[in-house]
Image: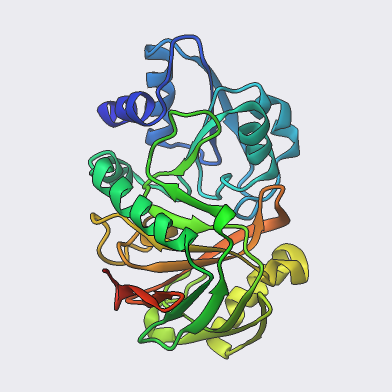
Length: 308
């Protein structure tokens, strides 16, 4: 565990002596949090521990931490509820160059697995997919479960999560491995959800209908997800905000945690709700689509979950 924490801080964040490192958790007793904090001190960083409430949704704002985040060189989130797309995280990154790695829902096994990933290979796959996405106008996705949806490309919003947060303003998840486009506004069609942390699995056949980038209809199996979103922040939580593609070859099947499953090589994930200051909302919730066939314009880029 301590070796993995060392690799996180040196290889993925490029920690330098004297830098301010804010480590955030919403857990009572977390060995990952302890290991990371210990390693920050051991490497000569200035450690600031922050504990936040568990009574929040993914990426719900943290206004009381704005100044703390703005003063940080590095932010590390070891949490159950994500801080990736909080407005405070985004401001710190965009305005002050803070480097960020978040680990929403991560456990010991995933932490150790993430530190053994082939970062070079993940980056190669992600960059190649991003290059194709930036040249496209429309993305079309179908799946064996029944997804049939089109998304208009927004090339300026394409980014690659390759585990490298050594540069100013960079944000990565851990585990890492996705190429995504966010924030987006336009999506039309049917999404058949294969996995959501809101107790949805492939056998449930949960479906939502999108029109002009918003959920407008849903079946009974998807009602729990829709109710969760609406409770978090009303109708605006039903808006599509992100389209992503998994690029980590080490992730092959559903693990049961979104931070892992959205990185499955060749998978697709779609998120609803907010994205920092670009789309203010109290929730950011991803759903995963498995074995997708994806076209960028008329070019086949993923065939039944295999990147071509």
